[in-house]
Image 1 (cartoon, rainbow, N blue to C red):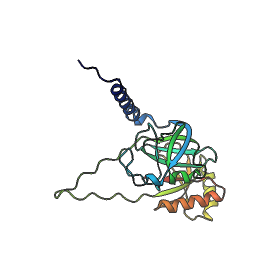
Image 2: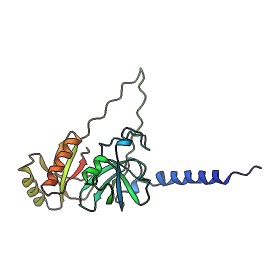
Image 3: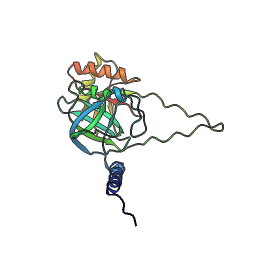
Image 4: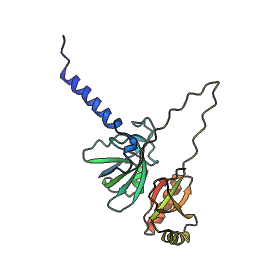
Amino acid sequence: MRSVPLLFVLGFAYVVAAGCATTGVRPGSLAGHTEVGQASYYAAPYHGRATASGERFDTHKLTAAHRTLPFGTRVRVTNLDNGRTVEVRITDRGPFVEGRAIDLSRAAAGTIGLLGSGVGPVRIEVLAPAVMARAEPVATARSPAPVPNPPRTYVVEVGRLRDAALAARLRDVLAGRFPDARVAAAPARGDGRYRVQLGPFQGEDEARAHAERVTRLGYPASLVEDLP
């Protein structure tokens, strides 16, 4: 009987271990998971390329790469140097540099002020279980063409307060400069807080411009996808 080369055995074991690390965790058990580490970002050279999830990487969207979180997981990333936050969706694997925990898209890195340094300390909080995109059926002569996805909308989140009166007061202060300021409860995450938000905005660029204006006024601002 011929012996199996040792390098082949080790290579096969590595592939199996990697597969378990990325798919063996139940997405539903991750909500509330928090980790702290270094974040970096990737941009132009990878724009338009296929990610590990099969989705095309768009440096202008709020996405990120993580070594083990399931694709589709939504996480909040907080820059520990300035307190700015952004919510992203995991679509890729990485980073592949030792000591780093997450790779952000350029848009996400810009939202939390990470473009200048390129690398910085962050807190990563899992907000919701992964929602994997379903494969679209191939259109045939007997089946209707797939309906295009509606455009994404975004809000700029300025504060989260447990006191409804304080939330309303902050909204009134912002309304002088931003007529679209609003107070919204967010039962989807179940924390019982009132969110003071601007928007919604149909384009990410418009929402990011508002977030930068709010930040210049001295308020924290997070860019959040406005989910139904």
